[in-house]
Length: 133
Image (tube, rainbow, N blue to C red; front, top):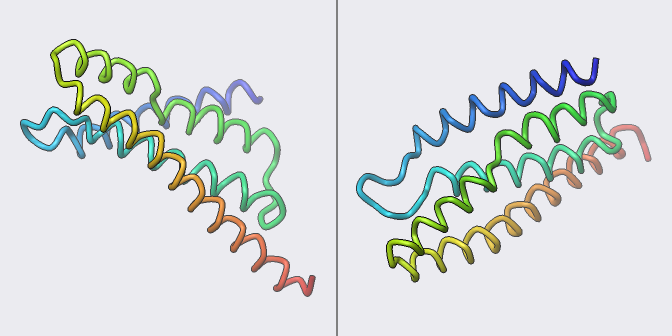
């Protein structure tokens, strides 16, 4: 069952990644890979929120947590596209853009992950208050 759920999550995550990447695109003729950045930031936030909020607030079966976290978010976010885009930027002499992309990805990913944890913690604490804990 877990393999089927993982496959479904992976398929849906990949389809959403492609769709969001196409929708955000690269900002017209810009060299900056906005699509991948948006996908990865979204994935960081959603995964952090989901894992934090579901520790006590929502009853979530471990198979669903795995299929969502590893399957859906794992296929939604894309380190390989980030690496390929970094290689292309550096290979074409756009070193400052590559540095901005790398630094922005790391710092931004950390910040949106922390925001997801904060919101997830808030949701989890709200559940405790509702139950009188």
